Image (cartoon, rainbow, N blue to C red):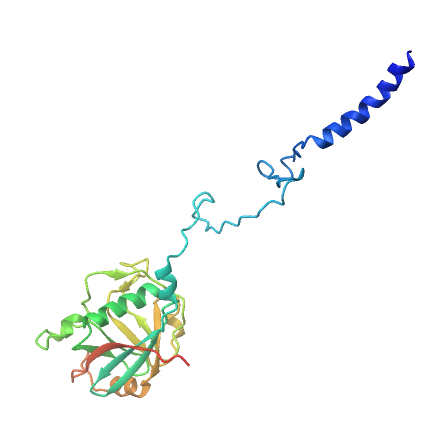
Length: 249
């Protein structure tokens, strides 16, 4: 072999390596390394580290359809000071803290009715010592309405159940129709009751949405009133319900 060709045959691989290294060739990553085309930094032959994008989703959603980001007004609403309900009667005042985060739909419905004056002049139409006092039926607003009809009324709709909290003493919960006609355990639209004692046998059956913060002595007074055979007090116990900003300590 001509010595000149022998020398070139040795030199060619070296030249290829040099030229390939200076040509700015793109680094090629395998699909096991990156999901998609590699991202190449300017002036570099290696890809930038992959960016991890987390998609939060619920079982009823596909990853391609993630839940929308919360709106600014919704975030602000979450940070508003909570409200308490003030139930005024001729026997005194009952102050109720509302569990907005645990039973949001129930509390919102209660607040809307209170702001509209729906509860005003309705009565506590059912009182049972050691058990509950119950009210919020619009049919009780008119004193001329037959007492037999008390407890049968509401705002003509139901509220989805939000069953989570136990029936402790002072718990405030929504009344509802029985399981036979209401297997989803939806709450009555307006009638609520206040527990005079812890009532664990009601847990898992009714939506608790609040708790008496002060005024349990008023609840006790009402529960001890003389009643007819339907546990309806012989004397009307009217209420007014208003909302007030809670004092954040």
